[in-house]
View (spheres, rainbow, N blue to C red):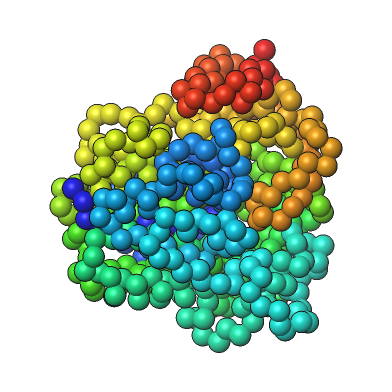
Length: 488
């Protein structure tokens, strides 16, 4: 056991970007040659789901191996948490973080804690990186943007780009490659965190032209979250093209990093893991975004497959003796990635370390076992607010649970920082109901079967309550979920 470990996390990377399943328009599909090549030599976990949602809570799960949604929300990393790099350092690993995702590093969030070294590639989204030029021309009507000032800040941050290696994914991959050149002789854990293909979408023009050449309308690079009916059909299709272009840019530079890994002779003794924190609605369910943001208010949207289902690809070091080019369809979640890394490192006392995930090595070996019966994906459960719903996924079903309290506004003026770290007042939007979908027969989740399959829903719901109890969730967390809409 042992060997080097590299984790590549790509924010907002939908699972259906793999294998040319993401349709931009009229059978125009995304092409990601480098990640596809990785998949062809790796074990792909086809039923992987995030646990805590969104960006910052997901990294908390990944760095602890825990389902932190029962006790944590979007906030700085607590100083007393035992994290993955701290554990790996004791096992003789040099631990390095290279990231351009701003929310885990800016404003005192300190997700670098425990790493021997870290580099923050500046300039993404609302990173307070540059103050000039002052006058920024917006690419579309301000009413269509989620946040005008953040859009301006992002454009300002990246104003002086001239060639592709000036784009942030390139800078991140190049920095990671340089680190590998200097440290490949060590036993290492390298964590690379790409913020793209998160919006604002602004890849080099030729990446967008791959998918929607000749478009002359407004470019809504940072759309307002919520119902997408404010967009024209052409604008929405172009948004899908910009997202596809951004994902292709990320794929290009992940390929650059993989090439460097190969050039340095690291493929044989290095496990490479590729995953994401969540997906994004691009017109599905009549939504754009991953929650609902209207002005200074924010509500929580139901978490369907486009958001909960994530890619998870593991190419194991040769000395682990695991066959590549394999697909595993067992349910797995983000904390299981952490447990797998620790297992690779030869660390066995996972329960003593507080790790709640399970190692995926037995599944990768083809053993007849399963890690879990359900996958739970949810925003923080610390309090019921703003239309909170939890998604419970089984082999065949997706149950979106709405506690009866979910439509009630909690404390007046309660503020959240989730999504981008910007403060907004919590407010529920639209009808908030429990929903049930048969994923095998209805993978796009268009027909709610709750009223027809109520006993199936109750069985899954019971497993959810048991899951919370097994996690050690306190009574005040579980109690609001004892009464869910539609399950009386």
